View: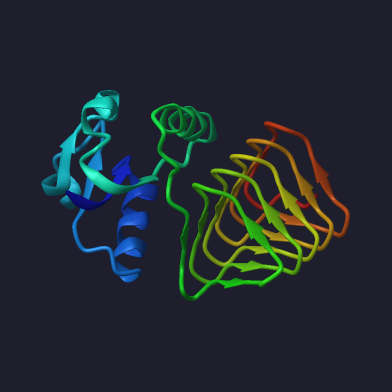
Length: 186
């Protein structure tokens, strides 16, 4: 049995691969429906995501390596229906307050800060060098791109995507399923 199976071998999946190695996972494999022959991780691809039910028992842990919020949510729901809780991965160079809560299947990457009493919903992504300050809430499947900075008491809706460099002041609210283009000032 493999230590970890990552669903998706694209950019986010490969990022999770490197993070998982850093966290001590040794035997890591992928499922991917659109593998490119130029991607080095192809040697670790054991099947297609569309064949998930066939491979669900091939690894002791499963991570969702898909940046697309809708697809990530669909895969999360599929795993839950199969009785599997996706693993949460937190980079050792991220700072997560002891009073913060991070739900299953979430990812916090290098240099990120998750402040006091912040709450990250299921399947969220807090990308490299992003900040979720005190008392903020990220809805389920929300995605913060690289270098997003959110001041305290911010509420980001379900499946919202804040692209790289987005900045939000105190008490900012972003609706469910919103997309903020790179560099947006909220």
